[in-house]
Amino acid sequence: MRSRGTLRIIAIGWPAAAVLSAPPAAADTPTTWPEPEPMSTLDALLLFVGVPAGLFVLIALLVMAPSVVKGPRYRPGLSWWARPEWFGGPTEGEGAHRLALEAGDGSDDAPASTHVERTGGGASARW
Amino acid sequence: MPAGEAFTPDQRRGIEKAIRVVQESTGYAFSVYVGAAEGDSRRVAEDLHNQLAEPAYSVLVMVDPAARALEIVTGSQVRRDLDDGEVALAALSMQAAFAAGDLSGGIISGVYQLGEHARRPTSLHTDHHP
Image 1 (cartoon, one colour):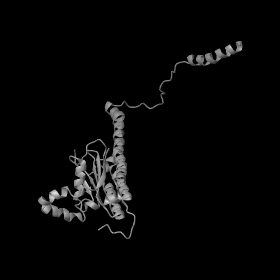
Image 2 (tube, one colour; image 1 turned 45 degrees about the horizontal axis):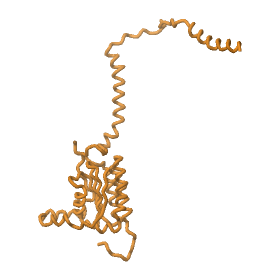
Image 3 (tube, each protein chain N blue to C red; image 1 turned 180 degrees about the vertical axis):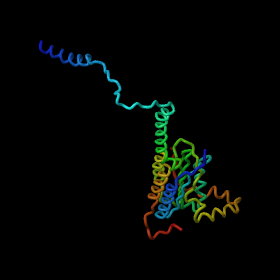
């Protein structure tokens, strides 16, 4: 048991002694190094602020470029900006002449078109 | 709000192609309206449907992104092959796509789904289409 306690003291004490007894670092700048010219504030600003800011802008542009090219995108909950579009509507194809006819003598046709066949079906949904 | 295009040219082509394919496979006219509908959206959708060349043989899908409303109107003849349950099913999947922000994808898959259900069994001896 005694030898174990000694071992323990050595195990803790030796590293602690090694660390604590180390002399403070006393190295000076080697005289062989070239003497740098003092940097002006403007240069320092350019280097340490301008370059990171430039990188920041560049990366932001790279990230945003695809969506800028693709144009605005629909997001639920945000307001809608686009003008209405009708695919396969009456203005194209064979329906066009019918719409033109209705526009020609509108007054007596208008009530008819509001109660034409209501026997169709369908479904509604919200999101 | 700046006025803009609702779809990119690619998306627009996709929707037009879906409509064309489905019209050829079913023989019914499909139409998709994307825009704001003032007032009762069901009413507006039915009015749009009645403006089509042959309402009885037409399906109108109206999407109002501003009001987040989807209306699908089927004509009386279309309804024989495309019952309201099937339409509701297509509406459900479109609704899910729209809620995720995929407007064109929802429209395209919804149109295809409607067309799939509306496809009539090929019968050579009946004659109920003009």
